[in-house]
Image (tube, rainbow, N blue to C red):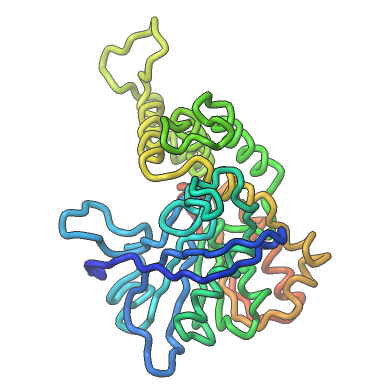
Length: 348
């Protein structure tokens, strides 16, 4: 039931003004599409990805590829985002490292990678770049925008910034602002990267990068994506070997081995500076601060909303989704809410 073979496309526009006021020229956005845009161009769905996601949401790049896109389970013929009916779009965010312009991209003024010279990125900047792409595709109104975690933040921001362009929003395991605990965990991950001797103030391109720091940041992050019960059921206190060493600091527990595997795998596909920029964009996201209150933030939206949370998600707990629902209902908006019973935490 997979969509099959897909390819990444690129759209370049000449000038982009960040929320900070910085101007970048040109800007390239990587994106993929699945299904067919109908003649009325009213069947388009935008999928927004989370922190470590990319434009590759479904399908395979080759017949030899082992793993499909990150949401292949839900995008394709006969699936919830049915590509026999809908034209599905997913783009890599500005500041990312999977084809869109980001810190690892070459600065045309210097001929060298941007590094920390790249402008500060916000969720608003991500949405504005997506708006450029949607207009390029000739779409005047999206049937729906769907995303989880940071993707949910983007979907909410879309409904506020471009209310006439969004028919419906599906926000999953997200919040109107990250908690102090979430910001703290993101900062620990950033410090792991910046304290790696190979980080070199972000100027590590062409040399050995801060792999150990990035791996550690991913390990920290991955713990927050799981629940304690799920970790216990998945790993417990099981050892990797029948007769583990108790005299050395080795990875003797299965949970240790799993975290190291996740960290190593992440280093192979992600840029450390992009991790810094994107986590900071999540931290800065605060609808209440930007609009004075959540009630004000959602006062002019015209979308239908489906808000989904997970009972065991302690990174983006259900209470944060309920606050969004309350603000929408206080404004008389059409919103449905479901809190899914699960033991799998934010990773659900």
